Image 1 (cartoon, rainbow, N blue to C red):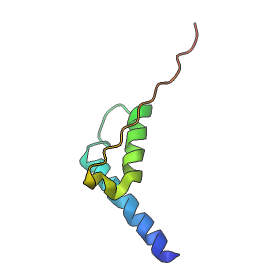
Image 2 (cartoon, rainbow, N blue to C red):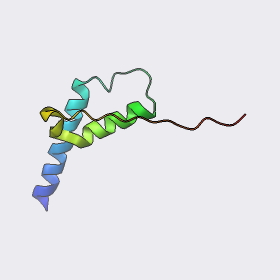
Image 3 (cartoon, rainbow, N blue to C red):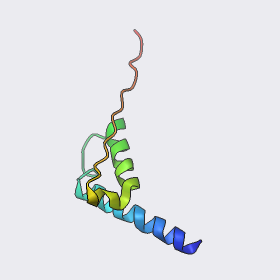
Image 4 (cartoon, rainbow, N blue to C red):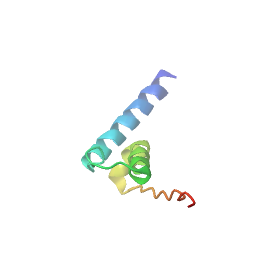
Length: 65
């Protein structure tokens, strides 16, 4: 159980490093797509270094007038 938790933590740390290298933390305006892309990049972990480049597109409904 502890080995699995350690692997998970290392996986997420590698994903966080990949998101930092792509400058996702320093972008000025965070919207739904930006936050989603950052989160998916962190969850992808080491897969980022073998060609995975996850992107999220969010389209929120506009309020009616």
